[in-house]
Image (cartoon, rainbow, N blue to C red; front, side):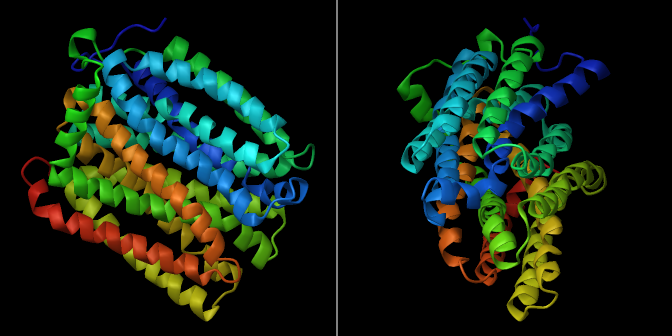
Length: 408
């Protein structure tokens, strides 16, 4: 069993690198679960005799499960520690992935995806809460950004793996792959994840305690603004994820394999954004870096609207702005999370749960909506990205003066 590790304890380079890898892999299970089967959407629709909207509902179900489940697993991690919830959740994820592979009806598949999302919530909660247990401020933001190096590999590799798996097997094989991945992560948490929340720092597991913790979060205007900003970033990310398959394959005519490569290339920008963020943090500080990222998001989305609405460049005009948008999403995820968790301490898991619930909840709502409005044109997707970017910028500007007091 992994040994305990507490805040303030010196962390060696080997332990730090191992922590980044384990936490990155745990945080990546959500993107892995949503991305690996995207190239199979058209095949699934044909084989299950389902509409495009129903197939996208399997994605929405997973996102909703990931969102709602975090509201429960967050307080559990504050009361039981970081290890027990994630090991239990990954065990359930393995079983449910096998169930998805065996599903022969789209309605059953949607239900199983919701449960699969619920089971996977503890991993993302654990990753964020452990960072807060050990670090604060810019050091926490730097570590969160380093996690993007590992997390970013999920959207880069998952669609490519899924696309080429379709050459060898049916879409069910992608869920077998998820079961194997879940088993690997469960073992990684069991043997390499330290307990970072000592028993004396844990909260009492009671509904009144949980309600009080959430009430404190909602009374903090900075937290509310960061949650809104996180929701905007999630809207950008999951709108692109849910719409990209049908737009690039259905409207622009890309094959599943070429789509997987394009999607993976765009996903690589999440890694780039995650690694650029610490450099900017050292030079400009957390608050100014995030302000610049929110402004850049709006500019990138505006350029995309112009290119797509005029048809300039065809598929290239659609794809070209997306790596910049995704790199900025990676920066938002790291910075907004750290700002939110900065003053939470013992309830870091609950705060992380609120962020995660909003992010995945927004993703679950956006997935079927994007499927409906982008059926004939990619322009609505570009407009949605512009709208979400404007929401994020507005939320940040409202509380920006408050950040100077405790973040540079």
